[in-house]
Image 1 (cartoon, rainbow, N blue to C red):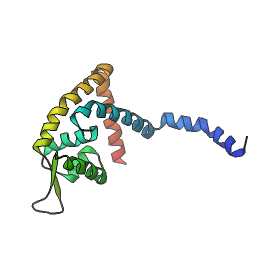
Image 2 (cartoon, rainbow, N blue to C red):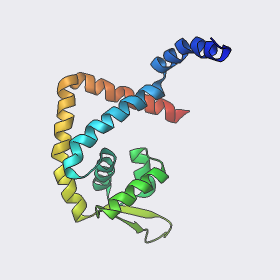
Image 3 (cartoon, rainbow, N blue to C red):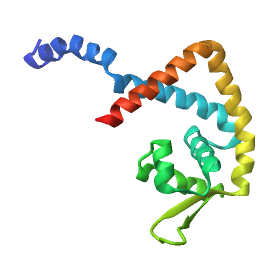
Image 4 (cartoon, rainbow, N blue to C red):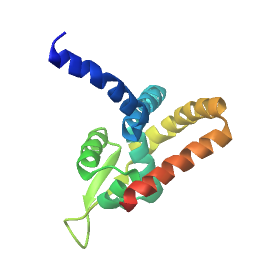
Length: 157
């Protein structure tokens, strides 16, 4: 065995241990699975999970500034802008310049966006219900509380 292969072999247990303990790796891995699950559930509406979340946040607070929407959805501005472009092309949202400050932009949901949300909400509810039945109300609450706590810790840094 070559020295390079020996080094790789000797690192394998350490790499596996890091993979088991790394919060970032494990949360991202689970997030990808969860996103696929919700994407599949929402497919009949034509929305993806990320688009659904943006539409819901927009509907709850419209008109909402891009900065506020970015903060609420914890999405960087570049990613949010890319997702909003898709929603605009589909006719689900409009983005307007601020009346007082043209540099500021606000997002509003369109009638077509409201219609797609009405179609998507029962699909989301069914997907959510399946998870809640498997985990139970207490475990869901603990999971969400723990995720919120991790988020707070990260923001404090």
